[in-house]
Amino acid sequence: MNKKLLQTLNSALERTKTTHYAPATIDALQARLSEELDWLDACPGRECLILLLQELAAKMRSARIVVSPGYSFLPDSYLLFLTGVTKVNPVEWDLPFSRFTKSVHDGAEIPFEAGSGCLEVARKVLSGRDSELVIETEPGLFEITFLDGTELQNIKLRITTYAALDQFGRTLKDGWHPLDEATLRLFRRGATDGAIFFESDKIREWLFDFDPESMSDLVLLNALYWPGRIGLFPEILRRKQCGDYGKEYRDTYGVPVYQEQTSDPSLAPKGHFIGRTMMAVEALWPYRNKTKLK
Image (cartoon, rainbow, N blue to C red):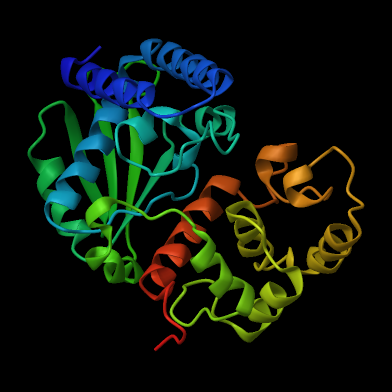
């Protein structure tokens, strides 16, 4: 394994030991890491990909460009969380690694999202590496051949500029803020001016009716408020209010909503919407102890 990657993983594991996790959670984290390292070791190109994404994220943050906390299927990898590429811990959110492995294969398109200026940084990073052949076939789409890869040899890297991330540059000195009770109260009141993905009149009505109790509830509402899934809201609301949702799919009140629950590709990818909801929480963070939003 690459020495730099090994050092990064060891440092992350040391930080894990100082976190007040329950023993069962620590066991789950270690088991997940072993699973992903086995996948990594099976093909040199996979390690090249993880190192490339790690370098992209690090260089962008050094340039004060905000990297998406979780985009598309990237949150499904614990390795990407440990290396700082994403800010979503898939073990804590029960995201299976299988969705990531099915998405990463020879010829796959790998998504990467960051704020303004990310494309220029990506071009510099990719032009300065000697372990890949890189061709930019269209703005933001790079065809990459890993010279020491085997099974994973050719990928496409899609760099997407998402200017809405720029607003978080001032608040992220200490990392993405977790949802606290004060911020949750803003969501419950529908006081979501500036909270991306939670600003429409309809989703404000949902927030008031649903009375979210956790980050999981906010992620659910965010995932439901997309074409093809809006019609699920009344039944999920009814089940939440009546307590009628049994033991299956408890985090979505008995109704399958996420791909990770049923492997149905038409459903919402949970990790993606966790990242999106983190952005909304971050947008409201500065106002959590104020009576009015500007």
